[in-house]
Length: 227
Ligand SMILES: N[C@@H](CCC(=O)N[C@@H](CS)C(=O)NCC(=O)O)C(=O)O
Image 1 (cartoon, helix red, strand yellow):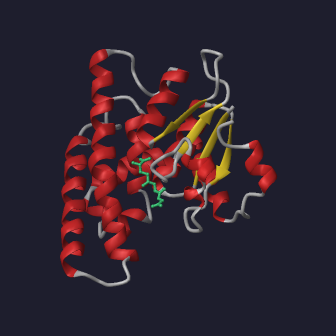
Image 2 (tube, helix red, strand yellow; image 1 turned 30 degrees about the vertical axis):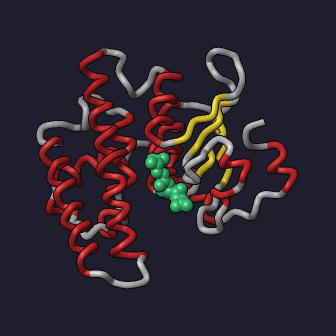
């Protein structure tokens, strides 16, 4: 059983999608980042950057103690290695998946997140950061558009690289980033291809249930987290 500590943001949705694709048994523990759950000491004990997602694997393959993992990229690699799915063990294929996973983690995710912030959430509309991050969003979409020319998926076969990028670019997020998706036909076709997968639908739905959740009771807290 995997416990997923998450909220339905793009980074949280990566993991519900991956868990569904990999057929793993899991339950979601809501960490409502709008009310500050990410600062609970019990959560910080294994997710020290006060960010979701994080997981605890209660049944690790080696049969030992529960294994906590934070950072969505590390979680995707961990789950892929646990199940042998969506990350090739062949050197050349694996390095390509990891290249694009790192591109998402170090580039697309943080930059598109800044675009969300300055275009949508910042209390002041500031021209310079809006221009900077909208232009960067266009640059990143341009890179991916080129990569997807003649390919169904980013790294050959469908992989954790696709799962990491999809929730950042699906509707409505591309609109939040100032992107008109029809200007990027290869990305649009790729988004549609991924969105039509049953496991992706289930993963998105699992995240949606998290929008309404009551605060964790002390009894719930005592039975969760790393113990
Ligand atoms: N690099 C991290 C980023 C995680 C992240 O930024 N999570 C956001 C939600 S998408 C969060 O938890 N924010 C809470 C906060 O800012 O306090 C990952 O990929 O796991």
